[in-house]
Length: 147
Length: 96
Image (cartoon, each protein chain N blue to C red):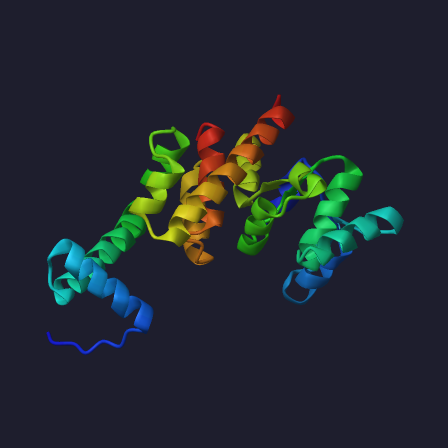
């Protein structure tokens, strides 16, 4: 979180994610992270995702990613990773899920950190993500990126 | 160690059938089942990322993963590696 302000890239979050983060997150983060309020068709799309059982935060992220044309989100929610794998929905399949390893990759590219693997191991252990889809997805991502 | 176990009717029938097919005692079958389960757990606990590498390189298939590891770990590898590979493809496209 501390390194996010040093990134050249702009992070965008929907309002639902801000509401989830707000109580426990330092307010400074919202200076560098742009908060986007979903309206009209984007909001409807997000509600369609919610009807399929997807959490509000993840649903809004997906709808926003489609709206912005980025077609990817950063999410380490095991339940959502499994839902996206099993739910046959054309729009949902368009969305690719990046994990925290994407940030490690950006930090490494921009010279903010040197060794991605030590951070990877610490995060997996601290968040109790051992033997989960989250661990495998982030590990595979880093390996595929040549780390 | 002596143990008293409670099993339902279906499991009892399966144990009986296995005992006849394998010409082994019911307790030997239970011991073997525990060993198999233990080995699967240990493989996953100690070598999960090794299996991820094997799967990503195409050396191990989905079926083999499901045979060698507990179901939850095999699923984590299958789902997680697809997710990670898709993300890496997009990240490479963004970078280039």
